[in-house]
Image (cartoon, rainbow, N blue to C red; front, side, top):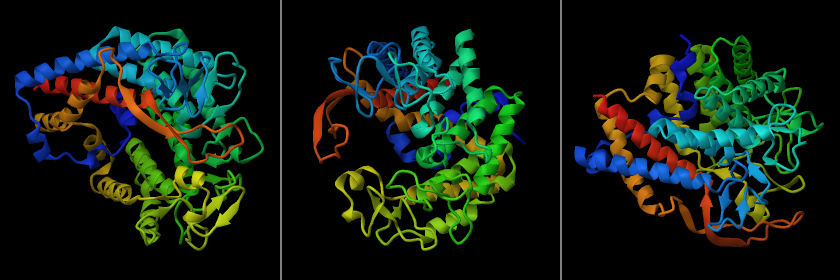
Length: 477
């Protein structure tokens, strides 16, 4: 069986391992509320949502959003300091904030939240370039950028948001921009089924099929969402099946059956930046295992899962003595690779420049993710795609809903307590890396100040909205 249309709504937005997180019954019992207490908290949550949404809209930049602003709005940041003409596309920027507004609207019915989501969409549409996509940022004084970036969920998050909003509004501008963006997604897909780091072609590694930072994974997620929303579009299905094939053919052969961060036109692992060698990558491999399972949920074809067992075995074999996994594993030897600029290989992570050593994740503890991915794969084999989808996305009983509500009750109360009267959530004494002048490497300095964070806003709105939505489900029993 395949899942199409509305059956999968919610799947690609949750898009995780919800069923494998586990809910503690003992924890839930310790936080259970009486009916009167739950009604009172529900009212406070709804008020907090409305107040938080209303405040956050006031800090927009021409309808869009950045990562951080100071409470007096005098300073703004994305990955670097920004001016009053620039917004962020990359999460947690404009598309992610727009999704939060939309989430709040769906939970509360607050029409203002929907209007704010529309404002965010219009800001993105103003910045949608000639090729139908987006770069890292939008500068409203320089709207001639033709770059489409698939790095760090940039273009993908914008397309996801526009598609979701297109389901709620009959708005010709939003619909036209959405369809244009989907055509761009299919046009930029490489002949082998992957997606490049950036488009149009630049004659360097940006042209390669790129898994780094979830690039291709996020593109596949977008096309799965499109497959839900527009189930009769054969071109979307064709693109998604083409991507599923790419996941299979890009897996490296035994004895290193993982995936690389990027592949050249000959489907060979390739260099990207001067510290990103051609190598097998454990974190990419884990991401791809879960993307394969996601594709199996959509299409129900068990052959999609065939690359997974070898990949899981290889991941278990290459764990380092310190219990972590290297970001880059040398082709042919399974030795960890560490590169400083420019393409200078060093023997140990301690030999890297501090900027590279602390800011790039050359080693990671993947044990928990590996365990969850293994369990998810085993469950897919045992119960099939329909039952796995239900287990990961549906709370079907009163007991399950109550347990989930109780699980997040403490977090909800904390969010409300930390909200200021204005509706803002302010991160006090936020510590972050000092931005260096162009051409200078980070020297180890940090800055500390109070900041309002889009990421914190998005997380809080998601939690509060979930509480409201689960309460509505519970009231139906």
